[in-house]
Image (cartoon, rainbow, N blue to C red; front, top):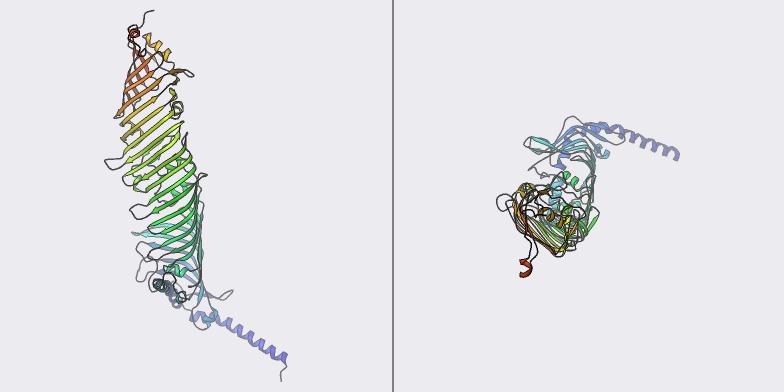
Length: 607
């Protein structure tokens, strides 16, 4: 009778022999039973696509039982066109026990250099596949009870892991293929259909490298139209986007959760996205954090915290998608705001090479509708400082309007508006400015009036309307009005008494500014009508203690040429004093605004 030691040795030898036989039998069983058609059939069952494998599988045993497939294509049933997926090579990890039983059971597939072709009108997932049937069953369960679907009835089939390396996505249209993304690598991990799933991918899209991570604890419910937890994390050099909340893909899809977005350059993200929704902007970095909720027709961003070039804002925004164009509406409150940089993202003005505005983009309003209300404790427009700003920005198919309803500036109150009306022929542009109780010196410095500035308090009103493809063309044919009224103060950069003294000599001269000079004035008033780019001065009067100077004539915006006549006389006096009043001094002013020429028309006073 064998001893226990000998008996154990025999059992160990038998077990080892069995293992060796199994290992030796695997290639034989796999090569004879796991034929190309069986593998293709299994892949087709899951995908719903017709699967073709160019060559018979190569079976390897170590370190795992694998079938190596060459020239694999997956095409729409009966399509006969470009394959939906074409891979140079596919590795499939097989179950050894299933292989010995003559079955195909794999839980991992690796695609090498796959090309995915997306064609307009093609179904995202062909009907009849295991995955499509599982989603359809989930959709039916959700329809029966949307708030508490019976998750026990969800498909519990094992799916597995799909990995891919060096993949490409192309769009096909009219026989032309366009690359969408390249260098793709990642995996989909979905062990069981009623369990959690995650996906990750890296690659290049429109020249930018990106990484995206997706995850859901209830992916089948999500695909079936129920609310399910979803997490999305997109990272790239151009922009970062993160969402964590619940979402649904049902008949009325919606999202509800926290999101964040950041981009180091607005211009870069505009170029990358190619949406064309926003105009080229001088805004640098932008970031946003908020709660986002809504569906396919409307998204609302609540408790939004936005930072533009380091300047924070708070408010709420709505993105409406019901019309022909998307619409952004809402309110934003800033501590500080660069108004010109902010509006450059929405204004129909093409940037110019210089510091001023350039071409008027008449097609701007065909990209986006906008209705924003802005406020800021402090704001700037170029070098102009504004306080307590209240403004609106509105863009639709017929009108683009930007209005400052009220702001403090130049020591007073400013109201301004810029409108681009597209109702009639071409684009009608209107500019309005009303500055009340302002410091004339501060206003003149901001307006670039370096030769002549009024130091005193007063009011300025400007209205300009016209058509044109750029600002020079607009001013060349503008219509409107200008008025200014200032009280007691001083005119800087001009010596009134000296100029009148030269005019009395009867010799023409070029009027030049006198740096450091200042002439005390009692009042200054100007009124002009503008038609066809020509300003007709109805009244221009300067009153000092010794003189009343009145000027009339025309000034052309396009050429900058002046054609004015003037008269200087003593201020109004009593009848007795008027009888002894000296004769008035008259003169003409012509030539360019930068160097006007004064020609006396009064005979010189004899010495």
